[in-house]
Image (cartoon, rainbow over all chains, first blue to last red; front, side, top):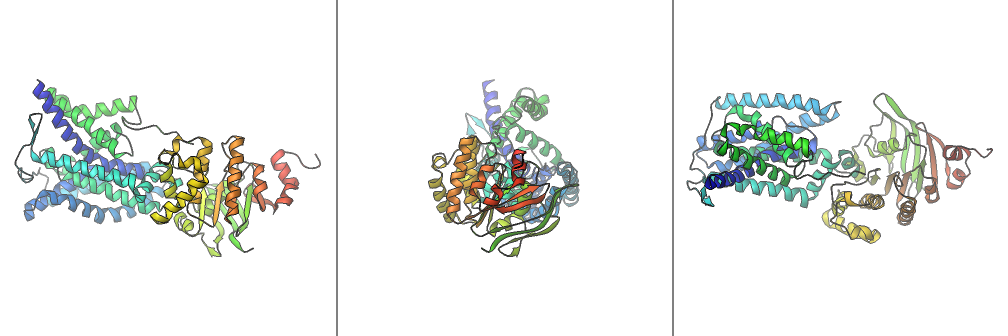
Length: 294
Length: 238
């Protein structure tokens, strides 16, 4: 029983750290643009298939998928941002229009991935990230899980340093706080937002590289689930703060693993039950502060 | 004195509601101009139009002789303008971060030099550099807003209601600080309901329903019947 509990907690922490990375891009894009990127999960899927492509076509290590995700985010993100976002923000109801638009984009990406790779589930070679199983508290997990957690922590801490230590990061948080005030301060809001959009997509794509390991496989149709789970995690954590999302991911990860270990058939409910509970009890998120405005 | 800012028949509004109906004004180099008027007269809309937050539907805005009407706010601010809104700060950011963003277009070293000057001018802020702006009192927040606006070293500073929400003791503090700013040769355009700010101004305008109703020097405005009527509801004749 104790061993099972330890297994669930250690596994949940690794799984949760990874899900922090899955969700953090959605958090950044929502914070800056007030747009729910309903295609977020599809960008994660794209990252997964990018890694699959590198491995199956070129025999490369799937970790090359991480820089490929960053490159892909720049190539896709810049034109996508300037084609969609300024128009959205000029419209009368940007939130509603963004739902419809990004829902459409999600369908397009899913269709394109299906066309390119077929509808089947794809896996990555299980030993590509090492064949050992390092253990903590006597609980062994595949090396791929440790890689996923390690890169997730590095990426999230990197994002936090960007937001809290650089001028562009201050500007990003200023836009999150008040877009009009950011404009009035002389911040080039479109430029800073487009960079945040690209970072958000890159983080989603980088997370996708590890989906075949953490979820068993990647398939074109799993984007929706990933978007919903990410949304739940960012609400559990707090909007705008990447460390909050990491902690939100941990709550989700440990919760899910505990349920999978002890009440497996209920485990899919975890993100939604947590989501509803948090919205009712602590709407600013577990780790968010309510802000006093002027 | 040559004109730093020229506003020529500017029209602006929100949706179907037109607020500015051909507003004209000028601010010369080194001059302090007060924009007076009751709530809803169009003062904030005019300032927002000048800085580019509110699109102009007609007229022209020239800064240093160049038409800036078509420029985005960041481009206008890079040309030597700075604006303090009624909010004035980013509550979730620290004092140091707010100041850094006030000098957004400047390099890191230039910005930290300016920040040091601001900390000398506003010692209260220096003690709390890492504190979130949200943790400051109303008066301190105004001071931070002012310091943030001064960070860019702009030639022309637009201030929207610097006294709003402040207790009288803090209003006098703001006025004293603005005297220091005026001493540096910076031009100020201050939109205010509080008539005490007239003491700072070289000239002023009284706005009503989106138009300039009266303009004149401080002495002329102090003796103006229209100003008295607008502020106290009575004219010289009673």
